[in-house]
Length: 85
Image (cartoon, rainbow, N blue to C red; front, top):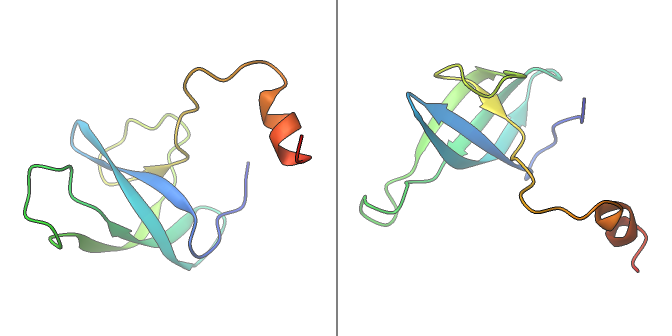
């Protein structure tokens, strides 16, 4: 599993909606504090803080966080980007 660090973008699961969030504190590899961004229908600046949020490897448990899914990734693309190609 990747290791979370301050400033990393993750997804926060709020019921059936996955919202973008930024890690603001790392308690462990599984537990972090987050600043969660609104989904676009709320007033700008209406984000909220969630504390001691636990990782979910399925990404489906309400109140948890997970790494964003990579959509449309071409095989080998991630490796090439990591090496500045």
